[in-house]
Image 1 (cartoon, rainbow, N blue to C red):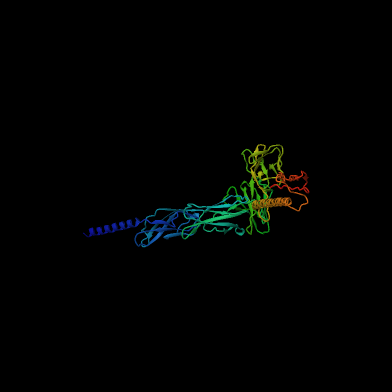
Image 2 (cartoon, rainbow, N blue to C red; image 1 turned 30 degrees about the vertical axis):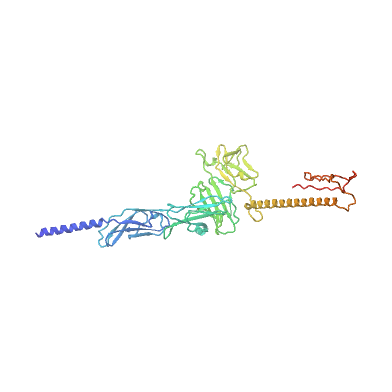
Length: 503
């Protein structure tokens, strides 16, 4: 009987243990994100939290993730400045502090994705006179209530990077674009974005540049040899000049246009490059005080056919800097083994413009119509094409720029026409006044009783005067002689001539 009782007690205890263990194991935690963003940008702040509902039990927490950075064994994991190392799937479970062998189930996984940076685009890439520059800051989910911040990149030579200066009215704009007016020199720009309450910010975008070929009086860049295209393994030097002691040469390479690079070999103010195909890109100088020089394109020749080695690929020899309107220029075609070639074809914007025995294309006075892409062809082999820029000379009038000269021209025309009209009106009034005086004088003579000659006439006799003739310098017709009562003719005193002023 006692054995039966013990058996029942043991069975009850075992059943109770199984039920309790099942009850604990059936608890499933929930992983939540605060703010509730499953996609964030590098630099933003987010908290990953493990929530266990049910009872007053105290828990220890265990996390499982495939991200590079592992969360601590706590109820929440705060990521104060997210990076790509935080991307991954997160799940958690709880373990009772009072009994470490009692745990919950694993929660469902939550995926967190961390993007690198907002992407800044600049349009246009090359400045033209009078053009504005438009910046666009691209983010995922643009309808998520983003605010945008806009900066100018200031060279920080000691850190081989840039510091950022907030642009006017560039703080927390609702629009994802920003327009800059009046930019004339090469410059760099940066954006970042923020959202939430409190607002969390992304990291800054990579700097993007707008390039200018115009001369900056403070900083200049010279290239030797002075041409756009270069052969493989050429020695190329880019020298910065100006009243500064610190310099660096920067480039954005064609193979990776999203990033900027410092010159690898800088000797004083000169960058030395032993050219590779990968060196093709845009180059410019930056001074320690934050000045930018004008930018230049550098192209390193590539094989255009698997059948020709590099020695057989021609280059177009063209100036690296823009030409001033009216200047002369000579373009030629060259090989590594032969610098001067004859029987060369020259193309302007893919249109053949010269195909004779001459080896050079000479333009005595360039104009804006000569601007464009040029290339040469020798023995069936074409060079790469290069852009030749022509700068139009602008004339400053009385301290104002040329853009305001049409306004002054219109003002001058209006004033001139008004003055002419006033003068013509005055002449007309003067002529009318003289005519009235002349008529009154004749009438006075015909009625004067004291005249020595009898001017009295009968009713059938009249004084007749000629009408005003048409023309630019006509005279009045002679006054007709007047007959007296005896039939004699009376000759008028003197002869009067009047100039007819036409209106």
